[in-house]
Picture 1 (cartoon, rainbow, N blue to C red):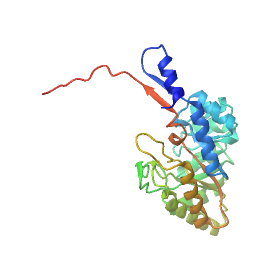
Picture 2 (cartoon, helix red, strand yellow):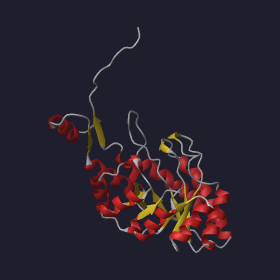
Picture 3 (tube, rainbow, N blue to C red):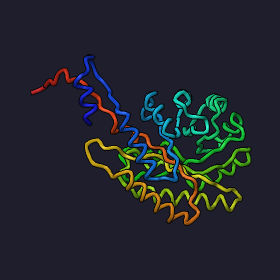
Length: 276
């Protein structure tokens, strides 16, 4: 808890629980991400904290936004983001939501199966798509390996199917797991992404983007590596697996952007013993 939050909580008069977010901490976090990976676009994961004040600040700083629903897209737009700075990153979307996003100007969508490609081809023709691949998430406190993504070999078929359906196969994404403490976790995922790039190239599909996902941790009780440490490790892995032909990259920090910026004040009403 920093001094600004401490002073606010000391002087407030309202009763009941209170969540306080220091926007200056959010600003500092964004700056650190931008410096750690200077050639990478930041897509803030709106689900981490969709408060209008947070979104407006990040939009003014130039951030892009990763959204998982139509309300999140609308909030990002209301905060000042233009449609080209928003991705619909949920791989399981209702077709009517795809159509609504398209009507709002969104042209970047995540997929992880041919059926999702078909929905986008019908309701968002000509859009860019990136295919999410599975990651083992070793080292993460909350693995996501069974939730989203397909096997890398299948990703090639999904992206080829997208091309046949009139969409633009744009790239590959992955997520190394939430609250990932191992800065080297991106190495294996990037090796798989590079393999997808290579196989797609052999099929005449030229991908141009790797979505490095989120997973960047925040400090709760234990210290975590700095954003700069992650940036250095990721850049080394990119050079290792892509050589001098490093693709366009984006990251999707969520809790790493806002987790350490807020404090909840609550009251313990009673601590009781129910048995001797």
